[in-house]
Length: 366
Picture 1 (cartoon, rainbow, N blue to C red):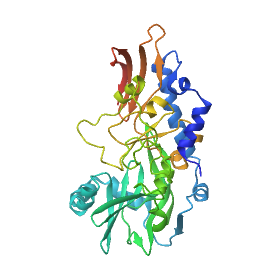
Picture 2: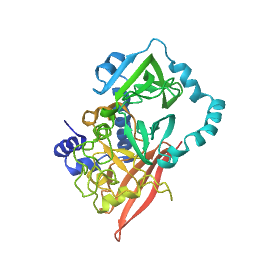
Picture 3: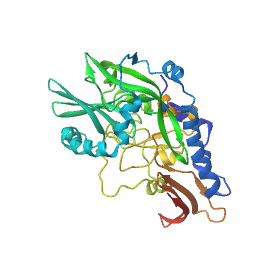
Picture 4: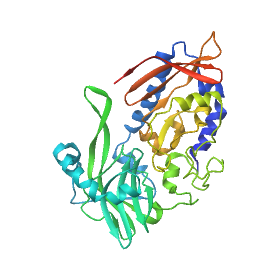
């Protein structure tokens, strides 16, 4: 089995550190960032849009069973719920009380639906920025199991007509979907059903399998490039579940410090104990990989061919930091950008007396 950290090693061997972390672009404000962002978007959208039903079924995970239903709730009918402000307002009022125990136990890391209780075990279907999960509370202990089904191809109905856990299987009704562009909004996309009436089944034994007992199921680790057979993927002495940077050993150097300063800032909110919340960054840069983060981070290769199957078709990265450009006349002056859903900021960064001094040099905010 191939894991993403091995692929990162291959990338590292094919490019030197200078190529992975620095750019020689003459105009970083227009060339480097544009190329980085366009590459990321092109790889994801271009790859995801090649999938039709035949290709999706042919490349489905081995653990997934797909049943074709004769009677079903359509994508159009189900999605009315999420598109209706009146319905959503009513559901939100009910949601807080209905899923209070799940929100409390999981520290509001998921949006929940379809709660179910079997004996002393509570189940609920969970969603977050990474994808779909089965959330479980047993003996007051919360656990979450990643499904590995990309929301680029699979739609799970908000309303499930039957219990989601049945006879040793997770059973979810839904549809196959495709990504569609929204006219007039080139930066946004939506989903359209290409075939309704599917029952997606996963054997619970396969779903909850955690070979290294680190707290993340094997499916999650395979999807995001961790080692399912080693609870400490980067061998830094910290188990993956507790490690804020589980893919790479954290280091201390001036360029790693620069990347840390440009990470998304969530103020006083403590995210370090939210084990199912991750920021996913697309980068091959060693200095970026070595950051000491305040929250959980994972990295995906820049080249789509080196990504895991899940990351090839699923857009889970909402922030990014580009490569570094040197100033030809001042060895302590550099240029770099970061970006997110709200825009791009270009910085000049001067390393002086052991510290970085950042100045905003441009960008835009949506």
